[in-house]
Image (cartoon, rainbow, N blue to C red; front, side, top):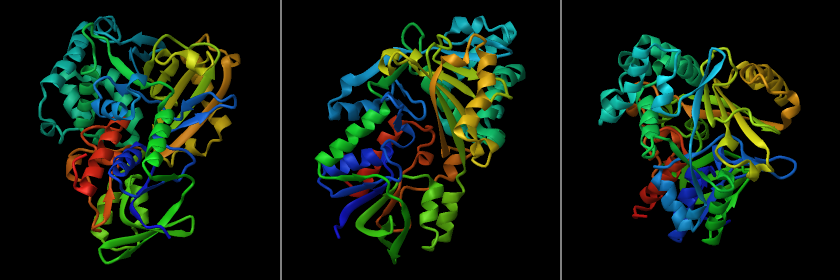
Length: 438
């Protein structure tokens, strides 16, 4: 039985980047992944003809430097695509463009004064230097006094409710502040938002990382179900994986805190386990359409209608070229919900039929014969619920076991989920575990 220096549970970008840096140091490293492909939430799937797309929509901000540094090391920095983005909002039966200050001035769903107040939000975002001063406030408590109740109710409230469901009034203002700060910081001189993408998709980047890990002597195994672990005092000794025992010197858990807690449930340290399960998550259902024709010329449309079964319409091929998808158009329809919601019990076909009437309402010219294929993907632990004063409840990277570590997207606060931060945290945890600067 081979004994590894490091065993990593999860082949998302945190686990893969950690493994990349560990193997670069010559450490015998094994990555175990439950699914059949790398990338976690940024993994890809293929349509029957081989066209590959992500299961969930992704992009980088042009200001994301951690991923650029890694891609430069991998020799694929030239595969980063940078383009201007376009955004909009669907409200009261109309799509409003909201990509520039001029678009905001034309947004007649608000009075002129409300439009000015809404625009002032970005000024307040830039002026805020210490996010902890607003951490005790909810998004509503912070934004409503700035933009006014009417603007908040029309623009922000539907999106926050759709994003966080029954947790909407508990979410820290820091979550929204960081989102707005990122978007404001990635605009060019003309005021257009610039986003970045990886040529060939994020699944391809995950495969490049896997190949580099293997070339450096590491192993990455798929379809590996970790069910429990064996401990001795304050040391983790081994994992039970597909009913086989695998031993290691150090262990890194990059799965959701809920899943990690389930692996440790019979090992003691009750108070520490409570800190893990205290972090709540929302699920996501993502319907992906492959179409003959484009729905619109906008990349990202927020849906401000509370009865719609999706909060965003992301037409990916208004950002990455349709030429990369057999000249078809790829559209993501995303919805955040508790994993106990009824939609999780729908079959893929039922969920498509559930969504189609709303697509036709939003895009009247849409016809069913545009639809070439589709996919439906679900994730129970898609979005950590970052409640007020969240920094006080984030678990540390170190477990009570001397050789056990955790690093997940629930711990990157004040930032939100993103592959750039996953890569950053992978490098950070590799440094912590080896106590060497990487």
